Image (tube, rainbow over all chains, first blue to last red; front, side):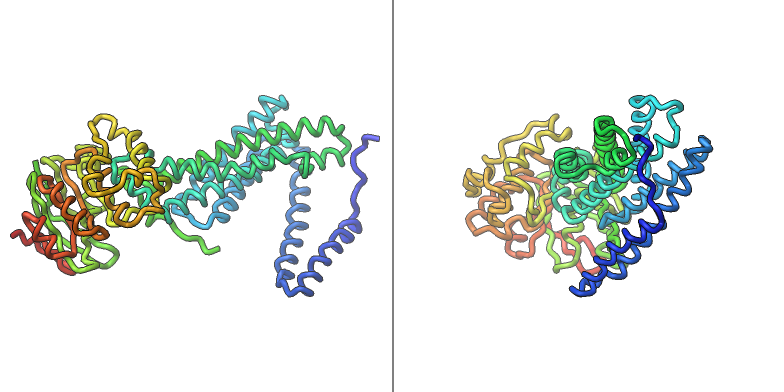
Length: 267
Length: 211
């Protein structure tokens, strides 16, 4: 009964890839010009996920602390790159502050999840830590990139607005408060929306995976609840931190907004 | 009491807007600044308000540098009013409420800006109307009244009456007659009326011509 899912053969994956061919035909027929993108995306899906599976297999059996931390660090770095790249604007030091925000936000919540709540022994056991951190990072980076984008857009396009507050004697934090609040709000909204509809419209990926893997759906639901809360808190912490660090970098010690430090990323 | 400027220099990219600019504005004086467009009048005011970084020189108010005042406090004493109020959220009253939360404002007395603005013909209803729905002249008067309400030692005004009729302009000029003001205007007649001294900014390098 509970012996795990029916194994998928290479042939099964080829059949699944056949479904993507339908996308390609549609794109050709309607002239969407998406064939190339679709092909690249499909190949990346296959390569990245197979690679991940191959890497994780020995990592789970070795159970080596240094290897696990190395992989976690690589995950945070990749998530940082993705977060900064998604923002339409950037600044020197955006990588550093996003990295710090993701490392502290996602790292702290992953630690709370494995060690504090689930009680994994040892807390860095890769079977728990790596997928948990992955889920947290994947969602946290969305929050960070949205928050960063909103923050930089506001400071760039709304410079005159900030200057009015500064000219009236606001400190840099007082002047940046509306910007920070707005940026944090836009970083938090996706996860709040997801929490509202989860289980109604969508069955989250992790829960689907656990159910397919033979876990009792009630147990899978409890894990999913844990994950949602971890993601929500990581997103909040990460977004707040990255917005604060960005504001720190874009105002100087003389309470001046240095909007010339904002760069437009080629999109 | 005076605003003292020595050797001020401002470059934007390759362009030098002004350099080695020196002048003093004594208490109660109005320094009228006239210059062709693009000569850096707005940049000069922003520099005096410590909103931009200059490339040399010194600004002192009563002998003290901005740092010695602390920058937010400096800006409450040397109050810059931009030519055009930007698209602020909410209404003028919201901005007044926001300023009351600034640390630099808590320690000082401030008056009701409505009192000033009423003398300049700004209807009371304007304070609760969204900025975006106010006319340019209404925005100017509200912004100026807010700056004036905390009684700054120096006012930095960038074309403060450019969108106003003669009557409101005269009322504002009369109200500001005894104040210490750096007043940028393209209107020669106004410069003569309000200026106790005048400063000409020329393209590139400039000389402080006191008259």
